[in-house]
Image (cartoon, rainbow, N blue to C red; front, side, top):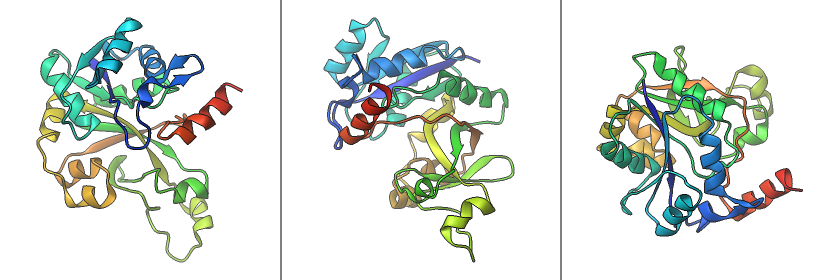
Length: 246
């Protein structure tokens, strides 16, 4: 089983233009992500997938592996699918967020290990919620699991709703999980997913993984305790700099 790690990176971002090239303690974000991912022992290859010449040239400058992709992709998943179409020989594709400069390589290895089970089509990571703030944060999607630890729904709202209890009591009653935005796909499944039309649930929640569930695909999960510190906005970057580079 050969796995490739793909890091989609685009320059244009509504909330943080040029994000992959911002400086974080003397190194760009995309280089930090790339260096972390390279330490994952489960990956046979790592590649940055971009549609911007500035990012392409920068990755080349630190001897990173990078490919140019089309500009019309709607998501990182679509960008990863283009890579898989053009780079043959991999059974598993891991879509790694380009805005998590401190991702733990062991998380990637954990995700790849899900595919030792032949029935797994898609896999992702989750983290148990420990604070009410995280439970209520609409920017941190929640996931509900079945008894096989497969995701059966994702939502920006706290789910399940615990009837008869105040929300500050919910975490004592049952386990709640946040979704960690890293995905693994069987290569052939990834190609199929990009052909699916946008679904009603996906449009409602703005979560693309709901499209896959609505179309009958199963998403395996694995629990990680690592805090990833993604950077979505300039404000997030300020917090990261204060946390790691005081």
